[in-house]
Amino acid sequence: MKIISLLNQDKLSISFEVFPPKTESAFDSVKHATEEIAKLRPSFMSVTYGAGGGTSKYTLDIAKDIKQNYGVPSIAHLTCVSSTKGTVREKIKEIKEAGIKNVMALRGDIPAELENADRSKWDYRHAIDLIRELKKAGDFCIGGACYPEIHPESVNQKEDVKYLKEKVEAGCDFLTTQMFFDNNLLYNFLYKIREAGITTPIVPGVMPITNANQVDRAIKLSGSFMPQRFKSLVDKFGSSPSAMKQAGIAYATDQIIDLFANGIKNVHVYSMNKPDVASKIISNLSDILS
Ligand code: FAD
Image (tube, rainbow, N blue to C red; front, top):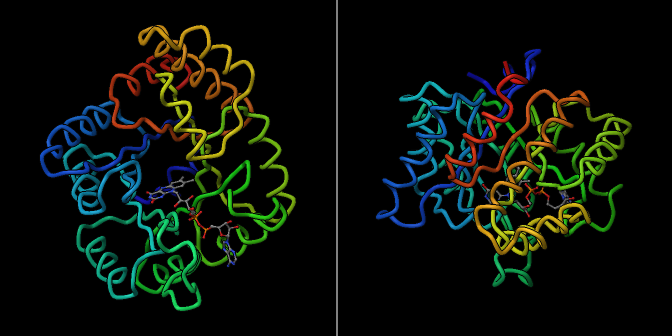
């Protein structure tokens, strides 16, 4: 099933993100975690590609398993920046053969060793190049990334939104946001992109922070602003793993309820292969989702 048709339904829903294992020895435990999350019947599940320490090799295996064995629509992430046309085309062929209809088309982060390389020689410089490739290759539902607090490499939001619009016009069916911890940032962003003429569905991405160590990592990765309300919670409960977990899940739940109350229909939760966290969120929202 194409994700875009789920997003167009008039129903509140939650989707989850998982990442593939780093090594073969971790494959079974990651597969088990993703299956436990799939049993919660989310609207769909996304499987990252080379992000969060997982390797690209297993993205398709996990996405296929979720779809075939649990009947949950899945979306396979694919990045392009450090790949050749040959590699990307081979990956797209494998995605097609696996029967995956949904692809999250990403540029990927620039590897440190390529920061100063001559980018004019690269086969893919931006996600839009991959989106064009996917459009040519088949009938995929294509997702793209967007950044309520602007992409860290962007000069300003106006420029970021201009490129985002080009990306949508190239064939993005929907956009998923980077994590954010203050919903007002999302609402401001939505206003700006709608004003710029981007009408595609936006899926806000919410990350439940369940331990204090995650905070620095999340900020480093996303450049997200941490509201005082969130910082106080980490200060107070950060030293108690169970209290921090409970508080982090409650904060994410609160964010999701506010998003639903303000017209968002599907929220994507960065569940980080944690079935217990995913399950708690679903149970916190049980009456709202029914
Ligand atoms: P782009 O859309 O190419 O944008 C990157 C930068 O280039 C922005 O500053 C943009 O404004 C600018 N830009 C875009 N087009 C042009 C243009 N034509 N000319 C000039 N400038 C332009 N990473 C992974 O490695 N694996 C994953 O699975 C993964 N999943 C993600 C899922 C989500 C929802 C998000 C938000 C991010 C994910 N990432 C993942 C991280 C992502 O790869 C990085 O944020 C990366 O730095 C940018 O990817 P992008 O697709 O947004 O790039």
